[in-house]
Length: 315
Ligand code: FO1
Image 1 (cartoon, rainbow, N blue to C red):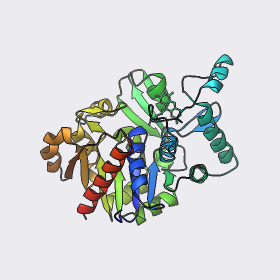
Image 2: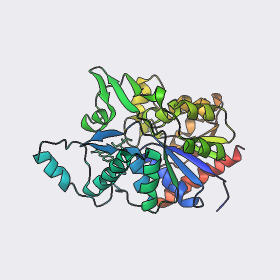
Image 3: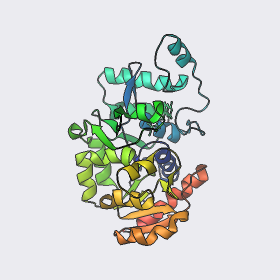
Image 4: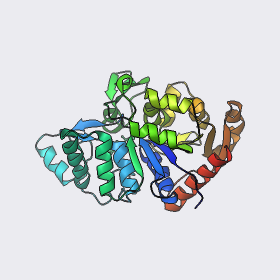
């Protein structure tokens, strides 16, 4: 194992969690911090749900449902069935085991702990040696602007299956969101910053909109590399490609590179996109083409190692 010093990864949901798992599995204990989007967080059944934090946490703990990428493997929906009988919301599939995480998180928040402290308690209890850091302890809520009006993120993403056309995106509360001291010191101490292949608009976007994080990234002291979530013009999962298009970016790795250009030095994209290399080099980024589909632990580890080697080569 080479020594990469301290590494910070930015991640949102499923794709981000996969590369975070690869990094977690090849780096020495305690050297990786994963800064996670919390703008998808919401309250349901009186419980504080942090979907992206949990997706990263379950993946790093080896507990994640391999098919969905989110939730806990082997989980059941018995509680939801009873909630449905009572007339409670059942559109957001909270598994029986998963509900324990939301109950405990909500309880500890109500007892006065902040989201960073509670996340640390939960992930330590699951035996995770990597630091999982919510991007902020303040409330931020992604709202999707559509022709029928503004939709809450999970309403758009899960209840409406990403079908409404996206006209714009708004991160409610972002102006008042402070970066935590834990996130700022992790960035200050990092030798490498890796942008995992998460939706650039609604997963990485909110992290970059936290002003103190943004400022730190714009005044870099280390190398910053992003991995494209768009392969051959499509996202493996979710609406990233369509969102880029509706916000006037190319619906390809080029659109992702342009969206992130001021925050990164290097860009990793899939080998199927190698013909886009010149276009991205023209915007001043160094490029590496690699197989980026992560279907098992070995491919997650390979992409993590090759991305860090590339980042190291940019020093
Ligand atoms: N995604 C879905 O597509 N349908 C669901 O019912 C759903 C439930 C769910 C429960 C807990 C959790 O942590 C995640 C869950 N997700 C579900 C995933 C989540 O909506 C997305 O992965 C993110 O918010 C987008 O990054």
